Length: 262
Image 1 (cartoon, one colour):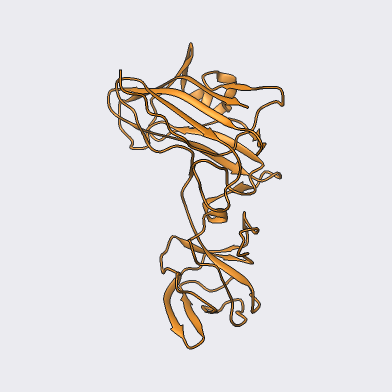
Image 2 (cartoon, one colour):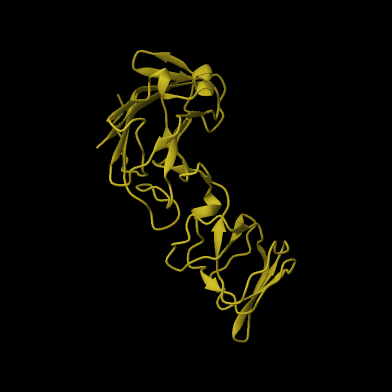
């Protein structure tokens, strides 16, 4: 038996019903209909043979005052698949919170030094010293320095081709034109596109069971934090990716998997 691995992770998880304190992740009724058709269930365990398959629970309501302890044993037959666990997060009106809505590029908050019009490809910013010209970044508009705008859905898929200091301001030349007018003084920030909200480090399954536990509670100030949910999360779907490295002819087995709410 391998040594147990304990992860202190995080996010915030809700219950199916207010009175329920433990969710059995090995029960078919815990998972959505699509998941039930693609994995096999046995006593206290579930097995997946599909590479990179995401198993998802139905919506759960989030209570930031409660702690959600996830526990499971993981092993594999026929190889060493990579397993990931996390949440798909949603607002109260069921709008999905993607990475680009909360995952900030650190230190990039600034304000417009001059008005920018729809169709423009140049921004004049008070400070762009931390800005990056990467294609996986997006422009968050009407941003707040204290992150109170998160989750920010006022997102433009515009990333810089060129960033330079020009006198008292910075000039940022964009690859794509602006989709809307932005008044002078408006707060903006670079956000990161792509990526899922995981609540534990990467799990490398093997022939012996590895025990994984993680505790999840509260909201992060910004971005993705292992121990907290992204801001604005009111509902969530718990998910497990059972073979993210896409190995063939591999079984991923999860035993005694549950979430305890307290």
